[in-house]
Image 1 (cartoon, rainbow, N blue to C red):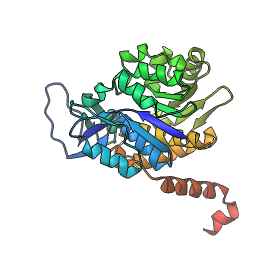
Image 2: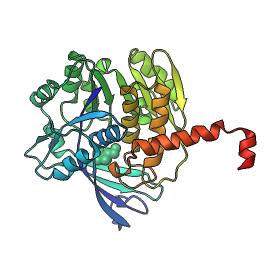
Image 3: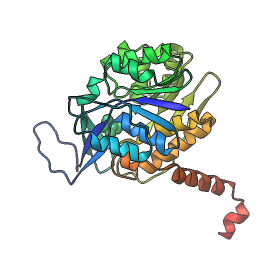
Image 4: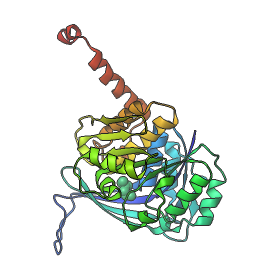
Length: 312
Ligand code: RIB
């Protein structure tokens, strides 16, 4: 199945720090690196590395050659991306010693996605194909509307959450992939537990497939037929930037290729566990063979009889 990801492309400026600076404080960074990122770009690369046929659409500035080259090298189709007169979007990311991050984004060319451009991009796709969106470009509500009108499967990752989400008709979304904070806001609840968040979201969006990510506590899947929990796979964490994007890309690649949701969630969890052990958002996204091999090894070790285990 063809997947259209209409999403952001950023240059990520990543600083590793001992702690986040307080107001009025100046701190030195231990390391600095520039990587390709943006939730859109990261998810396209994850989709492509997972084996999906993905077309990325969005806008870059005259400085965006590296973004296009990096995506093309990963197997993403980039011919629909438009050059804007604005500079490419960028993100300033501080990563602490636990691998957690604080991110500030500047939209730049990502804010130049117009309704006319969206209309043009959609002419290249058919009903039944997948449209993936995040909340880092302009005119997301319009894209949801038009994607649904066209009969595409609309997938929305409402991240980062802001006031603009209120203008999106989420009844027109087939898959919502969101974290706990976003889930609570959309469900309009202070509840701490995932089950309550999911049930409230289910009441609001009865037909939407829900995927709720819970960071180090795993993730949950809910559709009209089943609800289940997916644990995380333990990993040494150096940088969590882009782990959620890796999860989203791998999950959707699995669904698009016809894998059952449980398997798609397992592969997504394994891919994001591998990614947190590496620096940078897009460079940390593993290839399918690595993820598949780790899954196979894991299944093998679970299948080992106690006798085989003793012989090791
Ligand atoms: O999800 C991680 C991404 O968020 C980074 O790559 C950064 O560009 C921001 O968009």
